[in-house]
Image (tube, rainbow, N blue to C red; front, top):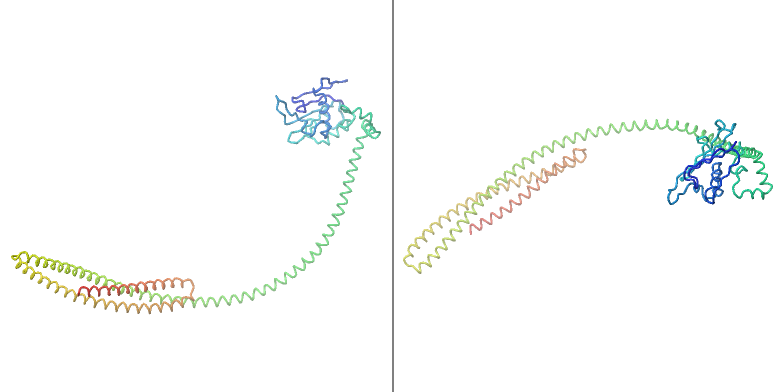
Length: 435
């Protein structure tokens, strides 16, 4: 297996894609200090699987990506591809050629490729071991490594010799086999622990199965007893349901009877309300008549006052004019005659007021009778309420009707009180008119 070419892109100082070919014979890379000669060696070690940033002369693996300059921006990926020729017989070789690639992104993700296809680092290490090539082998000796080999201890020198002889690959395989055996032994210990745990769980499950069987037997027994208990409860509930239905029928009859009584009371209340409205109508007529009498009395008083003033004026004029005394006396007699007529009218008004008062007394008696009947209706409604208290939903409606009737009775009582007050006011007006 021979190194054919090295393609570098974005690795350290190689911002552009660069390809270095290695022809047969000796190849030398020359140049001034800082031109990137050592970076090519770092690229070889990196693509061969080096995992230590310190050996690659960096603090962290992301330092191998081109970090940019004043004129160029930093890149986000570094890629190195190594191609080998005369690699017949190796895994992944295509017509004697095999290429190995490694990519690293600034986010930390990395990829390994064999002939452009993704692979594992383990697969690449297997190919390199078959070709006696690796990052830590004698195939790559970076600057300062020769002194370490010359001054190496026998054990370290033995590692290099075994690597050159191809023994290290077998040692690595033996180490892997030993690790697998140790892992298998650890798995056997874990299997034994699992077997012990499973046996313990089986014993626990056996106890639980016994408890479950006893539980099923007890559950069947309890279910049988519950069937008997539920049967007894069903009989008791049926008897209670029959009794409730009988009570419901009795309550329905009582409710129907109470509703009929309430209807009768409502009819009586409507009649009393009609009587009360008739009394109110008569009272309004009486009030209107009284108002007309008051207007007439005011007019009469105004005329009397006017006549008195005119008499006084006539008396004063009699002192000034003797000729007008006779005319004033005649006028006075005429006024007196008019006064007598007005007094006669007032007497007629008084008789009419007595008649109105008599009618008002009759209306008051009717109102007292209506109040008595209202009291009887209230007592009957109270009895109905006690009976309706035992009924169901319609009791609330009957109670609302009772409250409406009581409100009407209270309005009637208030109206009767107002009638009494108006009667007293009419009496005062009559006394004033008589005076």
